[in-house]
Length: 221
Ligand SMILES: N[C@@H](CCC(=O)N[C@@H](CS)C(=O)NCC(=O)O)C(=O)O
Image 1: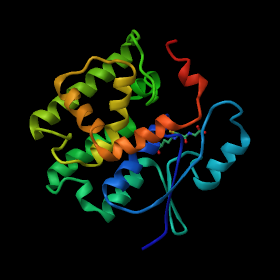
Image 2: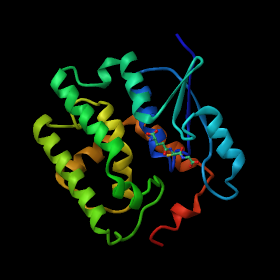
Image 3: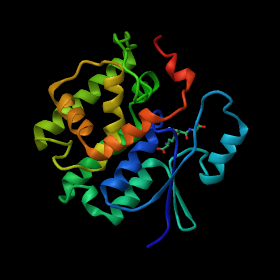
């Protein structure tokens, strides 16, 4: 078995880190994790260099498999699925649909990611007025989840837990943080993620972290 080390950012803020971490854990793949605190007061050249030293893109997550480096969250998830094929649906067409949904998250929803930064610990008391492109992303997300729940019946997006759920799990926390009203399918998805023991382990660690990134905390204050 190769030596696996996953480099991640702060669990409270780093949504890209959460995705492959969940996939590896759900796949039963043993790995060591190393957290590099990102952002916050005094963030500077030494942390940027620390990330660059473990990831050619200068971003986390990055998975070291012996001497090889796999970066980009979706590529790490795909590697995990090669070790644990049940991370994708068994049926070829359903698997292709799950890959479409996962790729859409990785490449899309830019306005949602810009305006609803992940901040697991935080709960806003009232919902901000979202710009039009963010409203469009939220509508697109609801339409996607409505369609997948109607087709596969839950409890996860493709019935059983898959990488598609890992890709959207951080979004569930964002909807909770910013108090976004939920369609029935979105509520079912969020409930399924929040009840997942692996997700809960990440969430507990996020809540216990000492770091605070003022730029994110100051949003909508
Ligand atoms: N497309 C990349 C995005 C990775 C990304 O943006 N990571 C952020 C943390 S969530 C990062 O490393 N930022 C570097 C920094 O803040 O210095 C992926 O899917 O892995």
